Length: 291
Length: 168
Image 1 (tube, one colour):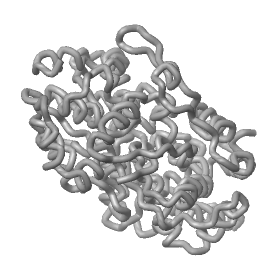
Image 2 (cartoon, chains in turn cyan, blue):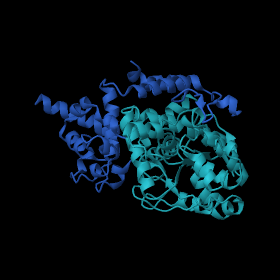
Image 3 (cartoon, rainbow over the protein chains, first blue to last red):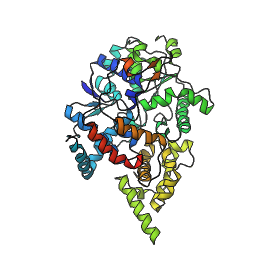
Image 4 (cartoon, one colour):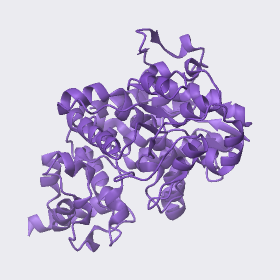
């Protein structure tokens, strides 16, 4: 299993815990990650110029096509964006030839033969729950973890999505394989609010806070995501959420899924950059005896 | 008569950007608005109304209000629309059109666009503080440097053309 590690914008410039935990965990399951220094997939700028967004995505795919390997896109935004680029070009040959003309000027000719995977897919569909279970040495017993797939892991369903929009349960099953408890809850497929940040940070944070409260009300003592934007909203901005909503109960330990897999298979918390999680993760890990 | 011609033209312009989804199929069930993420915090943000207004030609009015930028692009409305209108795609097209018509997007998006043209990424490498008050970045973590991919000059030129309007 070899993939081009396409980190996008947010992971390699800020969300280091995701990159580091991914690089720690995946090789342990025999997944080889190749360096792939490509630039923005266009997702954050789709609202500025759709054609530019398609061109940017197609360029990333074309570079991967040259190297002849599938892409591993750990960011939900990149993952949906690259699939959508492929899909839209298939639907619209006229648009495709226009985008190809830009790529040709950069010496790139082909982009539609590249497969794009998300870590959740690799863990669940390719590595498989049995292999994960075999490696668990520190079961996450006592942790009731809410899965937050994030919008674009599930929608839109007219393009291949790792999670089922009506019944997203792959992350839950991975969590159970790690020894933790996980179950459905209201608004599981709800939004973290990240895309609203440039327009209105306060209201965006309110959306994230609401999602955290829903998880707490459903009886969870932790949560997990595998999207850098969702992590930023649900974990990094928890203190801000307390201030903005005036509700001190907006407090829940949040982990990257790759961090939880790492903890369960015995990797030291420091190697998974647990000290970058701003939510109260240390207490819960001590409580359940993981650290 | 002049107004009529004008409104038809702007609706056509909008539809060209939307692509496959057809706003004219909307029958105003408001399912989109009832599940909308942005509507939870902005009661004036109602996707079914934007679709209706756009169909009637009141495009400039929506653009002027600027509230379209509250959309989180969570795609719930697109998923649950019984008519496959995908209000989210209408909103994204409205955002695109607002740039073409010279309305300013949120400042942070202009900043991101600038960074993408210059560096290829929406933001610079950040120094992040850990819980132990230690500052870390790619270097201190020993992560591989973000080397420039090939043909970046050509890439930059193409991007500058696409995003010229925003940067003005």
